[in-house]
Length: 514
Image 1: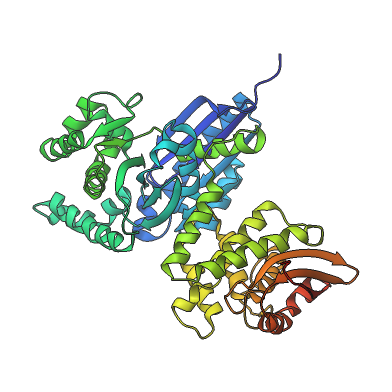
Image 2: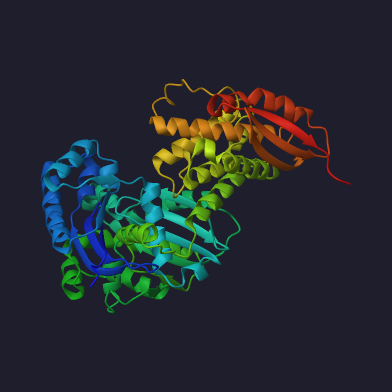
């Protein structure tokens, strides 16, 4: 009998450490075998002192030792261990990770916020049967972490906006602990504090979208489900009226009674009120009658990623398209010339495909080039002078869900080098890993050519064919108008391409057939 293919995911979260073990079968989603979780408020240290204390770290090590013992019992094929904001923001992160490595033989990958939310969305998309249908209409997905919340908007099947806010329930609890002891109406104070950030969010979100659906992920959802009296496992949705009842119950009941009557661990009780206040605010932002509360976690997303890579499983929702869609909306916020951006995007991808044997880059790099092309002119909204520098700053400052920190840096530098003199000796650029520096040079060389071919923003070139001939990269272009400006600009911008690929671009002009 063939041995089961078992994989594991461990999430060292800010308020809880969780491990899930699943069986992977080809073409199928993961089948859960084991789910272990331990409450451990690592974030309580990080959010107040900026460091993880030794006692908490020692406790974390003991929890992880127990988990690794289970991994050996199950004979796991592979395990991915990640940490989120409690480690991401800790000043002693490197020392803490090294201690865990020595004690537990675990290599912990500290996810960026963008990566963390990407996997949580992957979990919802892969495990909610109605996800694809829901996001055809305006849908808000609120991913409630202990350190922050991520609000992601979908419409017409595409991601249109995502914003992170430091309104995690544990962070709020720790920040306002002193006020809680002094406030006569702590619930009112909490609501006032939360409302300030949420009103700022309303100013940023895209206008004109009516949100008919609300999906709440993570946070204290399982505990809140218990307050409905229907248990945590089977409940997939809840009404706004039920949430209002939960809110009143939290205000009226003693914490000990809530814990005993609803089987809620006492350490989770202080996080419930801020969680419910945030959810009620988002219910008010939407016209949703029913709030969807799927039982999915970051670990589910990591296991789905294993299934996608090793088991040929297709989640059904294309998150690469989410990245592209989000970048198009970001580009729109900065009023870029849409037709020019589309020309540059399509041309850059054509050039990428025609030079594959030279650069040997993968499909992920192609996606990074596409994102760079979409965003390359965003800086013109800020200043027409050195707009490539402003574009770099915009890309660096705006989180793109689904891109790692390193990938976002590649995009930012590719955008910066699309115009002007590429500063390959810039000390900030040379601080990148060497493979990333090479990728930027390869992608920027292509983006510079694509941008030059529409210098006048009139899309005069209607067709492009590319070929490698001896020591030249020949671009056969069809144009019905004079392209002297494009040829002049190409001559100015081709130097990086020649330096990177060892070929000189040459234009061969074709007139359109009548």
